[in-house]
Image (cartoon, rainbow, N blue to C red):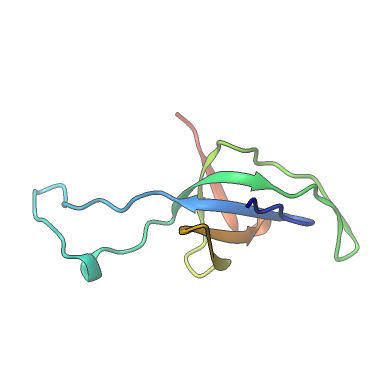
Length: 95
């Protein structure tokens, strides 16, 4: 199955949280904070959203940082995704 976002929605796959801190401390599962960094796996068409023209600025494969409490978590085929509005993406991570 495949998620196809509508309007200004973007489907993200969260990047894996680090298991250890920079100082080498191993973190147990519940102590790890979910990263706010993700990879874009699908992008909606944009267009008219709430009476405003929306041009999509992200593309599939982009690594992005999104707002902490943004989006809807979705589980599909044992994989977890987050569906957010493009507005909830705060930055594209450039290599």
